Length: 433
Image 1 (spheres, one colour):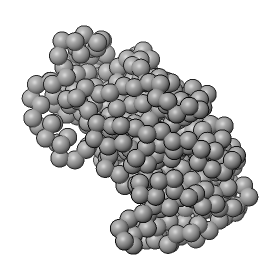
Image 2 (cartoon, one colour):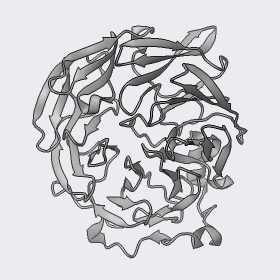
Image 3 (cartoon, helix red, strand yellow):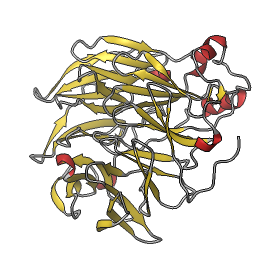
Image 4 (tube, helix red, strand yellow):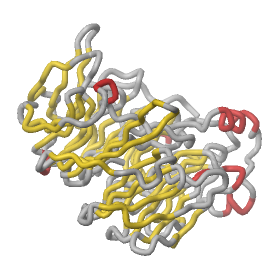
């Protein structure tokens, strides 16, 4: 959940255990009478006609910083689709493509930053989201491509990572405005996934604050084993400070900046640490006793920056008071249904949990980790027939874009209401159920 845009969403199974459960669960383990009673829909939804099953099924989705635009991609469809994030209208089809799942969308500027790859070349492009016109382009190294991190200066700047260090590019013509060298080998310049056992962690090892003023970075060093070091770059003054690890033996899990940019949260394999950006020091820690591990993985500040909502082990969601370090909300998954995917909205107000075994999308409040309800994206809690739901929450958490082989649409997270089916006239209808 990079701010103001998030890293690429990847629906990740938790290895062999998830595969075993998917095959073995010929009947619902968590779909007992009590669980079914909590759902408005069981099986396929009868209140949504087939004509409203969107055919623009996607593998990946990206929201703009303000939720006005949604960009989707399917590996069997040419190019990107740009949608109105409020009513689901198809606005344009673009030929640009993400590189390693990286793409930036800005709503007010109606622009997208992506790559265009040919057989032997790679080009960084700034594209008008409304008509696909290339506004600016710059050659890129296909062997060491630019990594897209986020926006700064209200969209006037684009933060990228390159072997030369972190750079801020102009969103008018992609020229370099300023840059800072970071203490790392050039082949480790690209933000990686957090290399922690929990594979439902979609965080990267670099996190941009909401305004784009701060960049936190983690990098692994391999000498006698593996150790992590951390640094904090001020992209306004172009200065870098080393963050001495508060727990040197712990592995990296995730970062999160508060909206007011006072706090940087650092999730490690042994708990959560809070860094005060004004005091330039780690001032608080939260120790978590999980079912198997203590790590804090994806997380976001919420409730006016007074709380953090975070994923702990086995799909358990915690709400943590920033000032006291106390756990003020806790939502454990059913023991038989604890493998799945966690997504928090950019503002931390909503969390969506996809449970693999029961094929359900559960919506929680980010403030206290209590359940708001469910989103039955054309189906809910079926006899287990995994369909691999791809989904993304809007920045304000009120809309969920979901897609699978039964359709693609926008859904209201608080109401389970179909907002709009994503229909593309250039694509074939979805297959009959």
